[in-house]
Image (tube, rainbow, N blue to C red; front, top):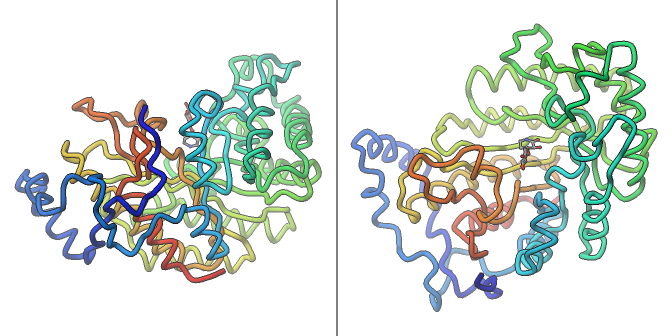
Length: 395
Ligand code: XIL
């Protein structure tokens, strides 16, 4: 594998974040005419030719440093397999990221091979890795409907569920006490499509314990690690669609309720898995939502950002531009809200992204969803994030 480019100044970046309305109008026209690739033909190619001045207001300063200058944290998720095998990636990750999220190593399915056994080998390795590389560590996740071990449904009953959940939180959050910047205590608690009046997902935890499982989990996490920032992490919050609107409303109601009951919840995590074919993003409406969350005296973290490219044209240049524009559009709206403290991408390089299997392209081309390409070179998405960080008000 080629080495990561250490001097980003030699690379061309995002040429312009063109006026959104012009962009959307021409995009819809181009898609209508089936000629997206043609439309983006004006953008300079090749993207990564060396020796050109960047000229787009973003120099080679790593995202870690640019975010720190604004009182923000930039970071990424990564897995044990990647971090323990690719030294070029490790170098890049440590250079760019101030905070690391173990991508799956802290999930029940990975930690709990049997009801009476924990396996912390990989999670501990990542915690030590973060310390060695001077990165903050973020816990993902204590209570989720997904990634539960096979034995869960056979062993856990309404009678023992609370005990098992409390024991898990005490053991896992307790093990890393004082070492976690933050914990996703409950993940994806809201699912509007389950059609409950309170918006709660009809998850195993809800079925076993009722809606109180959320409060119980947060109280247990606070006891196990009093210093960690405790986060309610949620997907489907970003777009101006009836589904996402319902999720926002339910999340606000849930957070209000938790705050009223003095439950130790400190932040909302907005996953931000963005869809490149979705144009219904309403920055003003979204910012209003962020303000409402902030008014509850809560912080906000962007926790799992990426942009899928499943439906985009094959041409890498066109794809990269559209993906970059999505990063910029979302982040410039989100970072205008001072309660937003961090931007975390779900992966850092296209070489290692869950979207390769979760949202593969029909034409089988490798996906181009993250700030760095498969050879660890920065893409327009990197410049988009850099530019959004540079334009953010200082915290
Ligand atoms: C994903 C991981 O990236 C994959 O490697 C794994 O196979 C499945 O889970 N929302 C979340 C994350 O909260 O935990 C998910 O991570 C991606 C969606």
